[in-house]
Image (tube, helix red, strand yellow):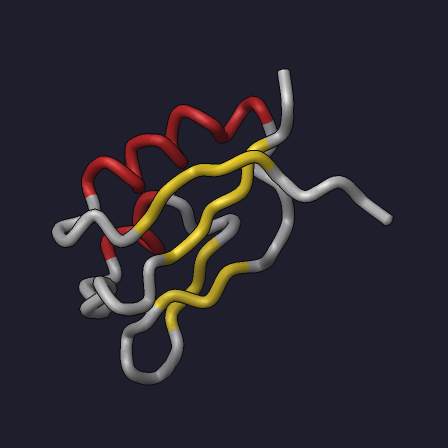
Length: 71
């Protein structure tokens, strides 16, 4: 299974912060409540929570995509 990463649609994100509550190992919030990603691929054990964070985002600003291959 290919590794996944989280991407944010910055034009849609409104800084609700639910993603950081659901995926605190990978997402923190800045001082305005917008997500900051750690950039690490999502490990298989966390994938279910990552999918939930993406589907529960109030404005659907998160999506999972294949992680970029390391150089």
